[in-house]
Amino acid sequence: MIHCICIDDTNKPKEIPAEKWVTKDASYNIIHVSIHTLQGGIQGVTLKEITLDESCMPYQSFRLSRFAVQLKDIEKLMELMRNCSELSNIDIMKLIEESNLQLVEN
Image (cartoon, rainbow, N blue to C red; front, side, top):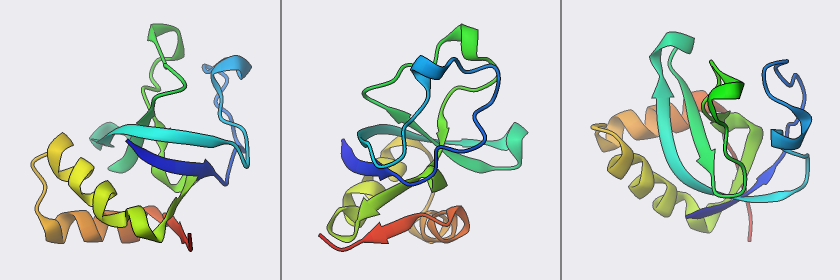
């Protein structure tokens, strides 16, 4: 799990009910990272605290760029990304850059 803070709770899709939506400045824990090829290759994260079920389809995860991760946890995030996919380190660094993931000091 990687601790993160929500930095963007705007543009909630109508398919996701309010009780299953993230809240700006709230803390969450990332438990899985995926790439959604059908949504232009965006990086999605599954959170321990919120389960997006069939009622939220087609949404299965939250966009990675909605969250900030502490700089000290970037290696843990990269390891989780490696464990959740067949990506190389180079691909992971490119995805992190493209996601506009915010890194914050401890």
